[in-house]
Length: 546
Picture (cartoon, rainbow, N blue to C red):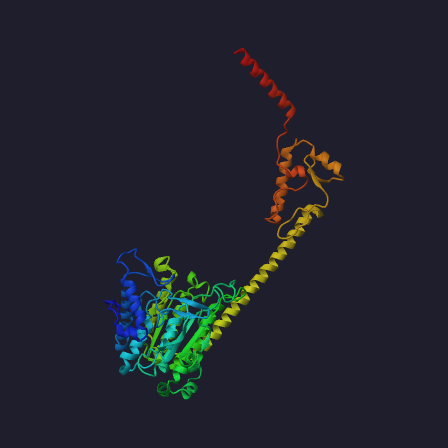
């Protein structure tokens, strides 16, 4: 049996693991809501308009949490280099209290998430294996949606006090509640690293700024000071002193965010005139130039991946953001494996997040993306290739030059094609003028029949004649179509000649109005009327006789 694929019974996670990252009130609320629903297939409840639950949803979330913790056990024990947890529901939008809000979305949404099981596993690893060399843990999220829940959990590693003012007709007061969920000790904030690449901006290019934001409307590009200048932040802020003097609680939101090691890369929608392929290039460069170097400098002991595959180009959930392909998922995974080989003996735990383009089964964009991710993990377990910033710089320059060269060749081809079309157009015009004279004035890609004088064709002589005045045209229109066979033959000859010049020239000779009309046989209506009268009189006589 191939040892790279192992199946085991999934156990539920303990409440202790959940409470390292979630508030007890939120966990209890989920449990009560799910247990109150009937154990029937069509009994569906809702946390919000986006997130549906059933009787067994909380049980499923507990088992997902248990599977991620078990994957940590396997990897740290050395049984496997890495692990992938193919589990649902997703989790990275679940914060300590569930919904996370932001200025662009003051209401927020659960985003299909119940428990943040990846954060549960990261806290479990840091707490349970602190004596086995697991001190620094990193979380990399390449789901198309910002992992705002995971980021908020990381910010909860800093003590804080949340306050709210309550006003009544008779009194006014302020309520305060602490916000602090440590994983191990006061050094958590320095030993946890979070980075996310995601879509950020309006839902579509036509949407007005501030309305119709792409979910969850948070995560603009930002690198915290703790990542950019770690020495400066550590010198200015002593964690033990802050805990003793309550200084952490007096920090503003910006200061607390800068104390955490957080990188957000908010990618926008492609512009109409962007070079094809530059959207994917931007994603890769965000890893080459920002995330991977800082991750390598952080030197993690264990890497977690929030593996969301809804950034695929064919997944409609991303509204055109990011636009990854299978090769991109494999490439990102390979680079993370190289950093893991350099820093932590290849230890990686990957957990499935989003990915909704499942139509097509095993050949769907979702299935192919997961397969690419798994292929990179399996090959990474066999390879000992390490991280190299110089290789990434060379690769970036090579890919950029390749895309630019391909764009130059595309534009050169378009210019050549445009010049060829112009030459063909001039040739058609010259041929048309040579064939029909100056009466036909070609315009555009086909010849319009703009006539300087009414051009007619006598069927008997088969030669074009200019009608000198309006009376001649009227007389010509009254002529009977007595020689239709010869006229058809003339049209056939002219049609064959015109088709050699261009496919767009009509296969009929456009002349006077009589020749453009549909040909009908000549009918003598007076004779027909007399005939009908005779038939009616005959019918009357027969009726009288009978």
